[in-house]
Image 1: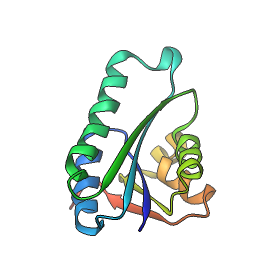
Image 2 (image 1 turned 90 degrees about the vertical axis):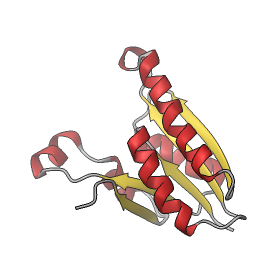
Image 3 (image 1 turned 90 degrees about the horizontal axis):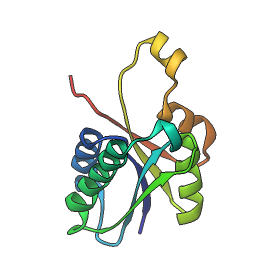
Length: 133
């Protein structure tokens, strides 16, 4: 049994992660879907709805195959903080996140949740490319 913490930020991300996970999960695995939003003035009702939709895609795409729980966090943290805290809370074995290609300047200015996660965790991180060439 594996406990996989799956981070999503959009419906398109969730769709790609479900494609990947459908091929590897077993019925006794547990998927914890996580969507993190900053909250306050930086988050509007549409953002919340979009996050819920992204989590619904994970649930609907995998719930017949394995156990899926969804969690949306709106508490002022960076996404990597929420992912790390959720992993501790659920005793996750590893992370599954999507990655996008970014220019070097984009990485320097905006950072990358996946990159920060890789640097800050001692758990394995599976990185799923979001765009195929």
